Image 1 (spheres, rainbow, N blue to C red):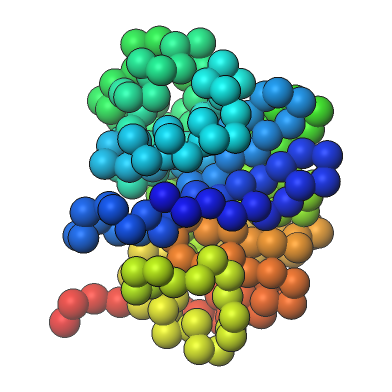
Image 2: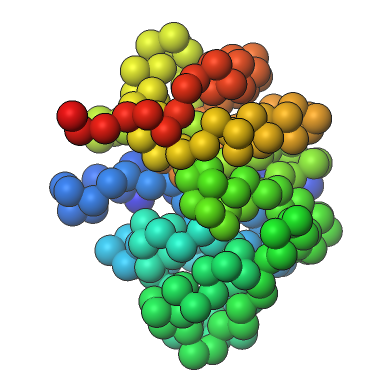
Length: 244
């Protein structure tokens, strides 16, 4: 499991991914951890198959007692099927997840961790010295879906929005936006079902000051590439791809 630091001015953002030892047919995912004043939160901590390398990676930076919170953007197994294992090592933690998916997410196993249901309109999480905003992103692609915005670091965790299907060992950051489009287009056309929901989300996030847009698959967008992505996504007709 590789690690890169996205931000380290007062608090820290770390990204974990590009695990060379993961099974070949499991989609590559990005996991994130935010650390502030001896508290930390894991964003979309991943599937069961990645639990062991993820735990080893995060413990290089924090003690197990400092992991106070988990966040799951939605219910998919690549997001949170490791929950039953985190439940054993983090019995006093809390998980923030959409209210809609509680009865489903609990199937992954949750006897100890406290479920904090996110209402449809959003919420916030206080971690250490920072307040993280939970931004509604319904139907992108899950019917109950949220993102996380850090207004201090100006990093926006975008879940499946901005995701790309990459070859093993791809860089952490977008290097050429135009050549990156082919890695994103089919994914967004197939997995994002609603142009209305897409445009509502774009209107919402354009009001935020975002320096990095960090998806759960693929590469991170920085600087001008954030706006290039929003412009591209706004013009894309979604919910149209098929196997035919």
